[in-house]
Image (cartoon, rainbow, N blue to C red; front, side, top):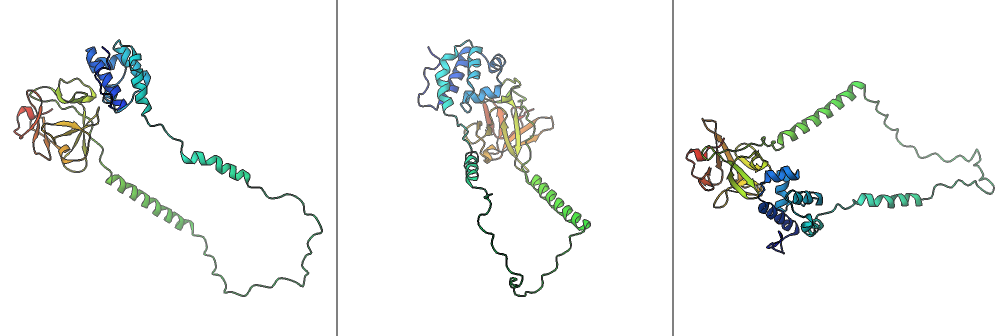
Length: 295
């Protein structure tokens, strides 16, 4: 049976390629860490390829297939179809306009250098001087150039103004995200994970799928963004999930420190806390239990 059987033919080419590679990885029994080591491809890149958000170069597809003892030729047609959908850079209008401008400049004739022919034009007689223009009020005398002290004062003012504007821009810019951190549940001893399988509580493995950045838009709650997938922790459905970041309050979380060194993740929209339940993640009424405590 081919690895390509059962895929929807109407799926976008990049998505079809990603689903085929993911199916191959699942059938091989290899973990993502095993594939990362054998194919020399980072786990975050593998996630983008499997989701179909990025089309890998053919050499990468070849290495992934060979790492799982599969003939890359089975995936060549899928890769070519996906690669054709990629946007190619177009030459800018300025580059195309330069030759035309140069040609136009070349077509403009220069001044003639030929000597005059025929007798020279007669010079005006001394008594035929041109009439003087009508009198006009004397012009205002030119202002003397500013002294060195005044020039430096103006330059200092402009430099100070530029520094003030730059400082204002820096103060108004969005704050940088906190360093990525791992959230390990105190009760289950598993980590908050968002991989190709979706959001889950999974054994801690040190991969980027379990690293989260707290991005604050100002004082108060902020969004938790996964470092590998770029998705945000969301509580708009029946259970917590990872979705594309959209700035909604369902993706705003308050990280509250507890006395024992753990933290509590409370959603701004629902007021519930993230909990690692016996079977899956959940958002429940905050009760301070170990299932709602993360290190």
